[in-house]
Length: 199
Ligand SMILES: [Zn+2]
Image (cartoon, rainbow, N blue to C red; front, side, top):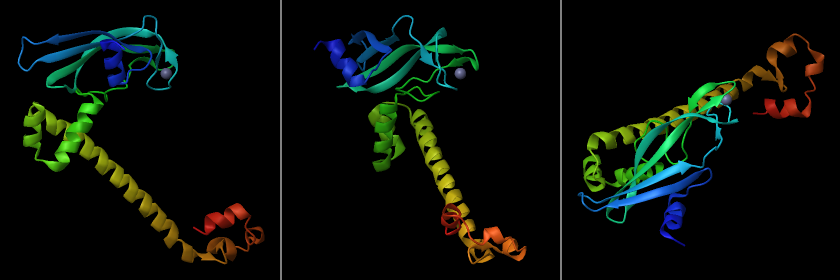
């Protein structure tokens, strides 16, 4: 297994993405490893809206900070295409190693968030050698997402409570208004209805 294969495996790259080139620069401090990722020529990419495999319309060069390679800073570079979907038009694709709009790979962000749980943000930013402002941006994203999920869960619990609190409105498993209206066929709910009403 050569160096490129090891790095490809380490990055978890899958088709159509391949590691095209790598360069370790020891003339700068800290030393940096640059990895250049490309998709094979003529590749099709999933439209971000519908997932249909589409040809590339054009490309933009993007760079992400990745986890350190030993003590060296590591950067991932790729030409990220925009797809041309017959339905949704021209859209920038999402790469599997980073979330849209971030300058860091998902693995870098994951490592940063693990450290933030244990240490102050400023200390983590010094350890990772990024500005605390950039680290705060990552923290805000993930905390916002967690809070969003929390609100969604609370909303689900509230909807469930509302369903439960609606139970007194049932008489013999039949909605009171329907029973009062003498809707006879509702008096014997089918099994699926009975299950639903039993919530
Ligand atoms: Zn589409």
